Length: 382
Ligand SMILES: Cc1ncc(COP(=O)(O)O)c(C=O)c1O
Image 1 (cartoon, rainbow, N blue to C red):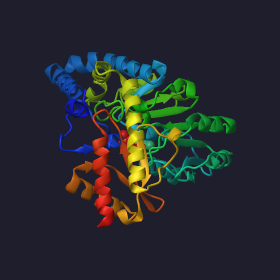
Image 2: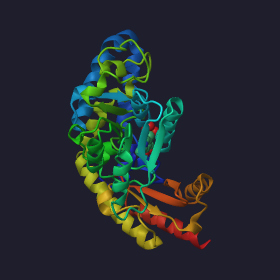
Image 3: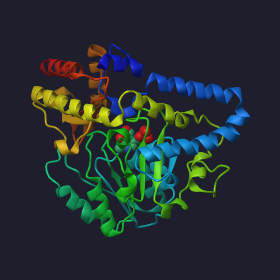
Image 4: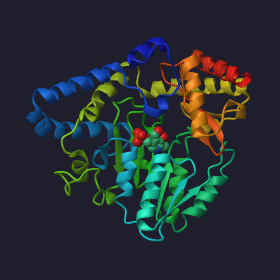
């Protein structure tokens, strides 16, 4: 199937170079249609749907997700998104005055806010260990090792947001274990992008989005928790099942639309029908590598990290002439690329420079990245 045919499967605009699968994913049309059918079923027979169908189906669908990410079904619950997963864990911890929470300087801004809010409420503090960019060596792991001494909690990315780096999660978790520091892994990007065996990682909690690289409907994510932490976990909403089994408590959130999570079988069928996620991953990683070479050579740009730290996303450092390294500067460049070239690609200020992050998905081909290269070259000579 050609990239253009894939684009049609996803229902994406045919005139768009969509190089940002990473931010919000994209949901195939067949999955959108199934979600509509589930909603119609809800409206056709609300009582039976909410009281009988939803509880049973949610457990079934969470079991399918557990299988996909290498987890035991009883250790995984749905949440709306990774932000909600992180918040649920932070609200469940007995953090107090003087406690130190550790993260990395690439932490996702919403996660940083959640950590800082907890610190402000409790008198704890947040330490951000600097992960230099480009990453040229693993000295930062020594800095992380030192910062973990005596810490109360670590919140560590599996895949960083602005810079798309796949971090050595096993080594980072081993450092946490060495210091006896509980660790929450923010794996927002990881499901679908990386092969996962969550149970084997040895983390305390792991949250990941299904709406990004698994292409589930928006608002589909999960929280995995080691058995010893489950009884203490506060669900996002205290509802009917509060105080019961943690999974039921997380799945009983009052009257709402549960069709996002109930569409999981449809999205898994979608992937089976087009060759599977493993095959897509191999294709996407290969395309991202080709695109990286094209852009790096064409722009003379540095890449955020070595090939072992990348998957289907690559971040490149833009020349200073590309724009001002601020939120405003990145939005302006973003708008120029969209308005003049129909290119959708994220640009983020990080440590005083603008970073461009490309994604590769089955609906992309090299022509998309050639269009980006020409557009950026035109902007540079203006
Ligand atoms: C590392 C990381 N954490 C958390 C999030 C938040 O994801 P969501 O908006 O789905 O909660 C993102 C989103 O891109 C992310 O990249």
